[in-house]
Length: 249
Image 1 (cartoon, one colour):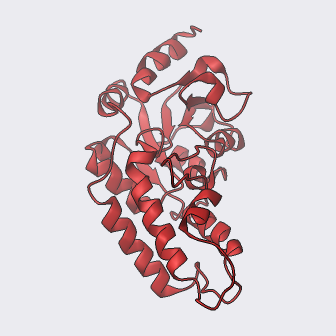
Image 2 (cartoon, rainbow, N blue to C red):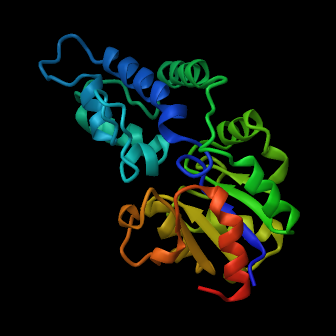
Image 3 (cartoon, one colour):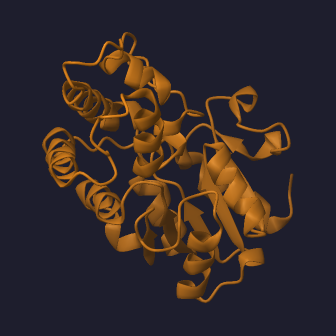
């Protein structure tokens, strides 16, 4: 019996590239502009983007890269290692933090793009009585804004981000918090995601199942993921859950 469905956000409910590519480029360009002029290194915005799995030339975001699967803290940690030792601390510099937040707001405002028709299947699952939750490595308020933008925030009992106090995926505590809030045991819960971090949190939390969103079975992040539980978009999820509940393959 499954009572709770926990969704990743970017790449599952939202179109990752359409929603976040402008933000990634803007933040990388700003970070590169902060590099001291006296440094003799050769790191620019395209290099910063490449390090987190974003191809600046093609606009492709690697679903297994840091930008897609990690948190903002993971991105800062990756970039800090590439930058000069006398560079500002990306984690601690208040001006940098403020400016990046403004860039995210400016380039992400009204740019939330769903991954196809997501409202219909989400409302179908909600009407069936499933408790729905979001577990993302984005920030909580950003995730709520995204869901509000596409008109589905009301469907989710809980939204957990990397800054909500439970760590970031694949740490299981965020998933377990979703279970606690909804009163559903992990074994009666399903994680729906597209990255190794999502699969990892399902394993770490002993979730009842994992459903992968990928273009095809060969694109799933780990070979142990059941190929029959790979869907390209969540409009296929209600039918999959019907078969799952009926015990059908």
